[in-house]
Length: 189
Image (cartoon, rainbow, N blue to C red; front, side, top):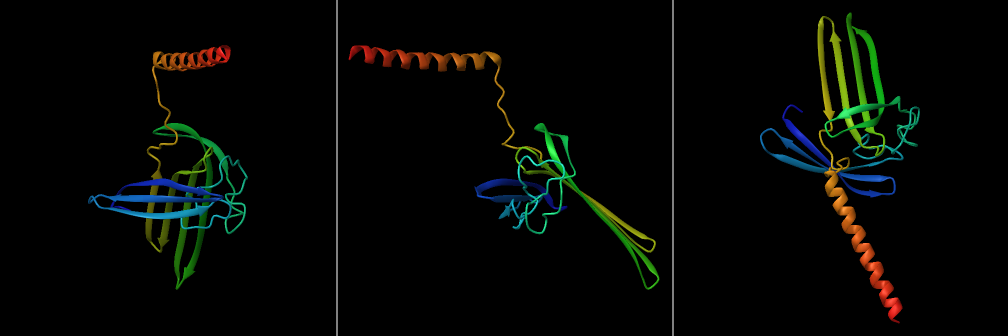
């Protein structure tokens, strides 16, 4: 992870409940690797599970309707701000915590992960996880955040008002010209 500069993930195909992705990892040394994967948004099966869930889920809806993750439920829908937009996101939070003793040494493990999917598309837009391990007196902590930085799906072109009016005027003029031409042809016959 420390050698990764960025990743780009694109939807290549949607067939039934299967979504096929291609992702490119660009490393800090300038090299890149490209791989493919898929997820079935009904079962969660595939090598890119959690990259997508069904669109328009709500709190208490399951991530997938069947399969291994069919009991995991959306915690809540919240508004999140990303560089290209503000959007409703579905949050799923998972926490694992346990401790045990072995050979008189106390061990503790805590792991939390938060997944955020764009509600309107079901595509993963953020993933945060953290882990704490304690063995005796030694504590190890690490965390990672992956978040969308841009998207071609949510980009809406911005035009000045005069441009929109001009485009509307051209379309209207073209439509009227076609209508009058057809009317003249009908009258000529």
